[in-house]
Each structure stands twice: as structure tokens, then as C-alpha cells.
Length: 126
Image 1 (cartoon, one colour):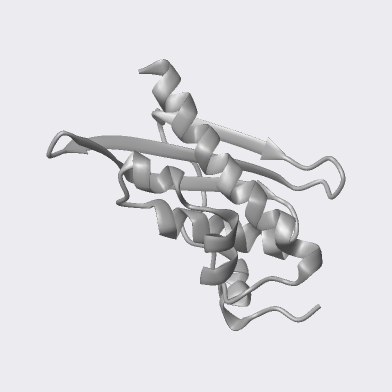
Image 2 (cartoon, one colour):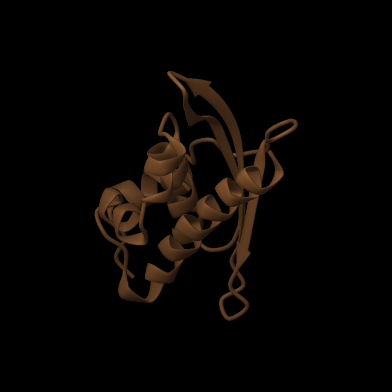
């Protein structure tokens, strides 16, 4: 498979890898077919009466595309309001990585879903 330079960079040098102590929200998703498992941790702050993602980390067990998309979603979501972050789509993730092979597009779907679950977890527990 041909991967873009950005995919390879985020795979070999993932951003925001790890966990957060006392996260405000956690989103976990998996794909039983390919075996990918992603967990997104978020810390929320408020500024100008708007909640935003102050910090975000991830743990991913999966292929290079899964790791790259997890890394990219954290870059896209950091500093965004919750409304803005909820609008980040799988296409946004894939486009920011300069594309993914068709067989790996489901990875960007998982990353976007994990972020949405983390936000929903926060909203349900605040």
C-alpha cells in the first residue's frame, strides 16, 4: 500500500500519545474485523463561556493507519470548541493526512468516532 508522507510521519512520530490523568471524557472504539482499538482522552476547559478541548491524548492498538489517524485527530481537535470538534469528520482526518489507501479509510472513521464518544462521555457525566 502507498502511504503519504504525512501518514508515515504520524505513524512513526505520533503526536499526543498516552493517557491523561483524570480525563473529563474517554471514548473507546474498536473494529472486530481488523482488530484496531482506539481510546481518546480529553480535558475540557472553558473560555468566553465556551467549552473547548484543552488537552487530548490517545492510545491505539492497530495498524499504522490507525495510529496515524489517532495522532491526526488529536491535532485537529486540540483547542477546538466541543461543537467544532464534533464536526470533525472521517474525511477531514483522511484529507489532513493527504489521503489513505481505500482499504484503510475505516481507520479515519474509528478516530472520528472515538473523539465523538469522548465528548459525549464528558457531556453525559458533567
